[in-house]
Image (tube, rainbow, N blue to C red):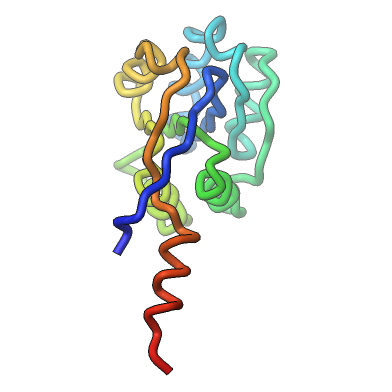
Length: 158
């Protein structure tokens, strides 16, 4: 069903989304502080409270979206589907039920569908930021939705 792919070029300056559930905000903030010298050269964005906390405590410029439960996860998902986010650093709390769990699941699903790097904890985020691919350009294959839609429309018999 999603067999038609296209290649997109990921630039050396990455578009990085930063998200954390309530009990993980301090952990993400500490991770950002630890990697501030690297992150300052990239375009950072994040959901409401998380982005504000990081910006206020690090001085980094962060594009802010709505809070996760108020649509921020969906806004990031839309950016991912438009190939405007290259990396998602999402420190989520697997032990705490969230009121917007369907949005969280959708964000992780769309991130996987569009083949972007996802760091869900300090270890995976460290692997991503220390990879040679993090500072280089590279090509990634993603689903070509326009061609898939066109093919599905053409296959409908009236």
